[in-house]
Image (cartoon, rainbow, N blue to C red; front, side, top):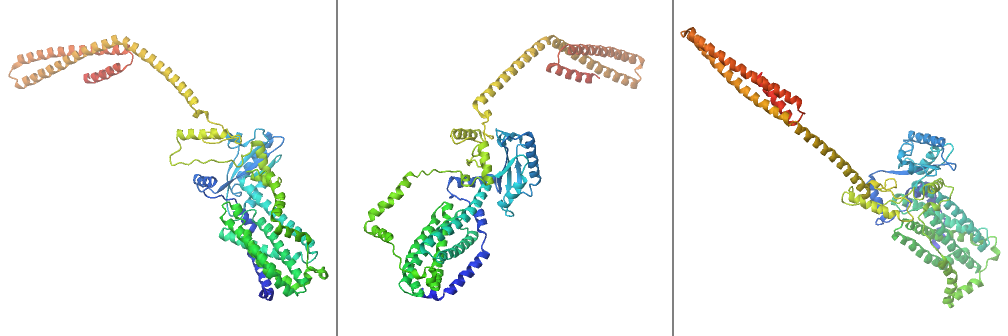
Amino acid sequence: MKKVIKLRWVLLAIWVVGLAALIITQPNMNQLVRDKGGYALPNDYSSSVAGRIEKQFNGDQNTTSYIAVFHSDQGLSDKKMDHIKETLQKIRADQKDLHINNVVDSFEQTDLKSQLVANNNKTLMAVFQVENTNDVTVHQLRAKMDTQIKTEGVKTYLTGQELINDDMSTSAEAGLQKTEWITVVFILVVLLLVFRSLIAPFIPLVTVGISYIVAQSVVAFLIKYFDFPVSNFTQIFMVAIMFGIGTDYCILLMSRFKEELAKGKDKTRATQETFRTAGKTVLHSGIPVFIAFLSLAFVQFSLYRSAIAVGVGVIFLLLALFTLLPLFMSTLGKQLFWPMVAKIKEPKSPLWASAGNLAFTRPLIALLIVAAFLVPPILTYNGQLSFNSPEELPDHYAAKEGFDVVSNDFGPGNISPATIYLKNDDNMKTTDYIALIERISTELKTDANVSKVMSISRPLGDRLNDIYVAKQSQSLHNGLSDASDGLGTLQKSLNDTSKKIDASQPQLAAVQTGADKLQVGTNDTKKGVQDLQSALAKISDGIKKGSSGTGEIRTHVHDAQSNWHSCRRGSSNFKTGIKKLLRACRRSPISSENFQAGQALSRLSIQHN
């Protein structure tokens, strides 16, 4: 302590320079809390696993949902609806500037009207898919959107999980400021009552205040560069703990310093003796506090782990107590307790002396007295868990107001519904898995706390009846009835066809007879042609020989004439067969047999020609 007192001005300079440098260069603590102050659960918790599945399902989408709420206590008339539609059209026109990727509303997607317009027709929702970007903060972006969604004749709110978190950060900042002022005022009042001095109360405030500012700056650097745990309550923890125990330690040390001064020691000697005795007590008390908060590093819940910052604060608090406080003591001496300088004496309190004596001599009685104050509150405490984080927000925050409006008109859970993810290595786009999902949906719907279940079998909250066996059976029955009617019609057609075939038998017989005669005529014609060719050959041969005379020629001419008459008779028979065949085809219906006969007739006509 002698060296500390000797180098007190050097140490003060170090504190002042370090404090100034940290204040100038430190990151924005409030913005760090907004960016990194979310509650993170351990990786093996179901919510964390679901979050990873969601990222796999959605890909690299870096968007979040903002919900624009349009409300009127008198109801949304057609005129108000037109105003809302115009507002949303303007939003679409400014999508790029507002970092909005998509707008979902009941005007463009009319099938979503039941989901986005309340049954009482007092509230309408529109969902904005907003791109997360580092170019603009949530706080700045929402300010622009709040201006854009203002609509004539209706109240407008912007809400959503991201905006609720932003309001919680704003509320935490406001709460921190209130806590700091309340703490300062309370400590001043207590110190004034304890020391009855105008100077002494400010010494603990200056000492603890400097250590708090330095510790907070260091924590800000740790958060930014080393991902130190942080939450909305980190600064509040530091203020409450550091000013609480810091004030206690200061009261202990300053009271001990006052005792040494009352014994007639000078300010330097009194300072040394104070830290030789009470200083050890403070050190032995502060180290366990540091270890206790440092052990929170092993806690899994990030909110509690963020209280490690208090451990950092305790380090700087102890440094300030053992460097700055000796400076004030050794410099001011008795003036520290002005205007009670003439009445400095060793403080004695019969009350606290009796209490200490009781604790040492009658420990059991002391424990019973303590239990009398502690047991009743413990027994009567009815801790009720709440998963409604917006309840922590005051009602005047816009995100909280919008959340309450949606909860009242649409039902709780519409802004941040619970999502269940099912993952399997098999392809789940099968009827078996759809049936499984529907069974799960049905079970969830039976829970009294569940108002709506949306799934692949209930895309809008109501189940698709077409997937049920009863519906499918009815469809099958209708299909079988239609098939039966069709079969009846087919049977009737077959019967009619059979009758027509029977009726066409005589015509088919006539066709066959004509075809037979046609074949005979064709054979006769072919034979006559062959004989004619033979006679002509003989005539040619007779002409060439010439010596045979006209008698032989006449003989061959007579033979040729005879063959020509045979050819004509064959041709006549051929024509007669053709006519009969044509008459039979005209009388008979078109059938496969008649079609084949027609083909044969065509071939015969070609051959004849």
